[in-house]
Length: 587
Ligand SMILES: [Fe+2]
Image (cartoon, rainbow, N blue to C red; front, top):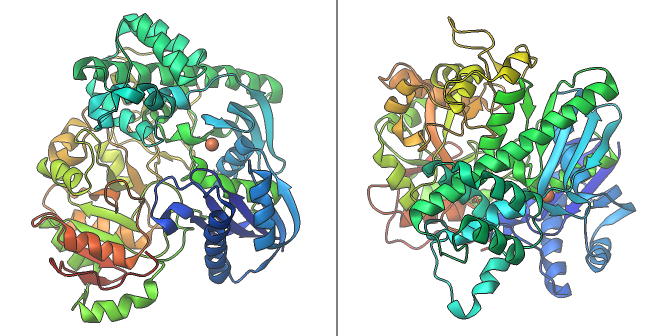
């Protein structure tokens, strides 16, 4: 029963513990220190203190304090030396960055054999690596492709004032062009839906991505070719939206080109088809590109819940000892750090215990409720354990929630939905592809295999083509188009391009959340759709919360008429506005 502890200490720092390949727990340090994309401190004393705290929590939760192997990926030697003083392990090993992404993607997937693409803004071993993998032998590198899609994608966001929402000091303008914050990737992805793809720009964007060197060189060169300034905040809004849309289009096309090439290589090398395609690395958070992969190739596509660097430590542990069978990772985070105070705080604040039906009734009446239950999600999406939810039948909810969270007005809000309602609300693969291509049937679609019987596929709606299935999306990894009726019924979750980044919920993945969705479908008078708007429970610039105290602070400070309740386990709290926080544990 080998016990393994694994570390990732750079941005999105995390630590995980596995036993005999089974993931026992993972801690993303941003949740502990309330700092998004948390990167370990550089000073020795700070680094030591941060990691001592994280390791202590993990040891306390798992009950394991000595390890057969400790694994690091892409770590400074001096930091590894510190970790070696904090952890009792017989052996220390190091694993390459993209290999970690690939191992997590493979073993989290339902596939025996897969083509795996790991792509992001950079690791110690490249920016775009392609592997083939099988559960018996692990992952094997096919090729390191010289292509960086991650950094150039987010970098041009700095020229878009609606995306950056900040002023720049003209005295140091080039400083802001060097390092675009990681948060820009998600923002520009939502923003791209507002613009149009400009055909005449396509070759220039292809060159920009293919020859990306540094932001200062490549962004300037792109601006010159397009005939616009790409200095910080320099674009007018109309042009900025088209730049974002064109960039998204080229990003997707370059990904599709690589998959097409490596699928051919895979078939020739193995004389067989893979069970499916795994996309991993930070760029696999691009739900529109992911959706295009499903539509284009007809294979099931799997993306782990933490494809970005939040998942590196788990992949590192699985490079050393793989899981014997597929194990759930979705709620592998820790319980609330201050959960021991829950009952006392509930009594003090006159919270009441409620049933699923009572929570559903509040939601159907229009309540916005923060839900905090069980262990935290693994990865950047809130999937029902640290979520803000409401019934999305009013367009105004979009503005209310984006305001509550200080999010940009154009960012999408997404649905959690039962699998059976998903097939009714969304277009399937073929219909979606036709819509994307302007109604034209693409010849490559009809010639590609279609694995309708995959565990990752939902059946089509009765009466429609059996090939018109849609992929499951348990981790909010895809954004298919909504049917017109669904857009009208639930405008708060329809993005500007008519898509929605859905979470499909099954009774086995989260029984309580699934029963809440079912109950909402029963009580609402809208045709029985089992759906809620589901967005992460946090506020501007902060990571998803993992403190009871933070949940109540957000509730108490929310503007009147917005957030109405917080449900923590089965306790329902109402706001106590004007009051100071009850508990301030570890903050
Ligand atoms: Fe990465």
